[in-house]
Length: 140
Image 1 (cartoon, one colour):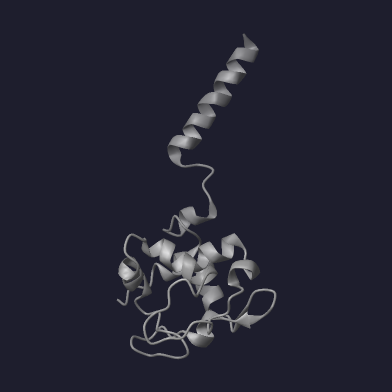
Image 2: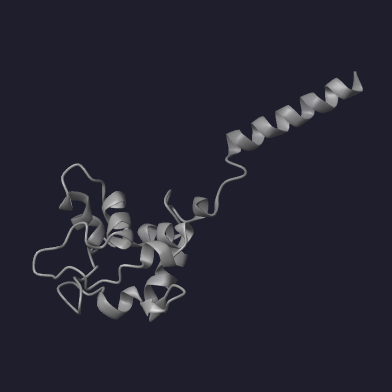
């Protein structure tokens, strides 16, 4: 009887945690189901990223509307990414742009300019954090 009661309490506790969202991931508090927005912002702002110290995002991409550095402005990337490639979500487009930067080249820019190593140099968590941050950039 005592063993049954303990099992019942454990099961009920687990059900309660699931119902209340307990045991969530680090993304639960960021408002993103992809990654951690704050960590993505920090990563974007670094001058170099990855173990090979490749140029960081901020080195080549402005957050100011219409300001082009080496690459396109990221001020409204979440909006533009949503319709850039037919049938591809903004999340998927941004992810692909990080790990396979030559998969789709924006008109007016050249292939091979963006470091090709981010997919290997960054962890999945770092890539997801960057995607989460970029998804907040809607130009507003």
